[in-house]
Length: 447
Image: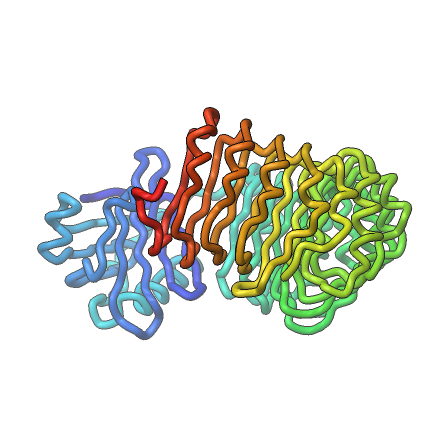
């Protein structure tokens, strides 16, 4: 199989990966492996055409790559070998060569190209490029050509923790970038606020506490902010000035929100799972745009007050809790239609009576925990269309399940003690999906 690889890329993460593609002919060859461990994985065009230890030997001569396949791989892929011309510059060729050697080891021989006058590669029109993916390239500095990408809208730079964030911001400040992903454990520079065109920002890799700069208040076009890491984060007070922010998710061990965050009037999705608060500001009841709210993770909160505020937020339809119990006061949440609770494995879960007054609920999803018994009161949730009680531990469902006349989907998978279905299940005329995976004690004839 011969083709010219006009799209040459590489990734360095847990695996070393080389991607060789030709978009016009719709051909893709991916070679990957763990550095220094031997053994490779080859995928041709589709995951179904994938082989382990497929390469018998390989030779890279200049930009010409020859790969001889083992017999089993040749039979599966319908080709004995690949001959690929790598259409890339010298810098990229050097990086790809290093990855191929790391993956294939002594299975590959690298030779200089023939002593012929090389045909110059056509100059690339960087000014027309809108999408840049340099994730996991082990970069220490941005390539010089990025400055010439005057139409650049998306910059994927995650997985390069040694990149100088301040220097990156200085370059991107002169480009119309709307989306940025970045990995860093450096202090977050004030220059981040100069990226005034950004609409989506994802930051990850934090291992030491971070205080985000007040300059972020100048990022008035920002609509989505996602922060991931293993350290505490303090968000700037100026974040409350981001009038277009609609999606805020901070997935870190602990986060301090700005005191005026309730002024973010366009927020529709808000994740407060790990934020430092005992009570919610009463002003949050005025955040009328929020439809999805994540609150779980902190047991010491005053949930009666918290649920009281949530109950006055008219458009919150989805509520996620990550807790070892279902707190009292949940009955105040009269507007929610989907309630998801993620409990600690093996923790005994008590069902507050107020939960069964939420007749407007359409979906109740409980993962984890140990129920003992599922209360008869669940049959009073007359609006339920979806019920998931998975990865838990309880023996049976109550006969009142048969009162859930709108129920369409029921999942009681992965419950080691579950052994009996209620006879009333036959009353559920709308039920079209019943999932019972990995319930070892369940007798299929018990219903």
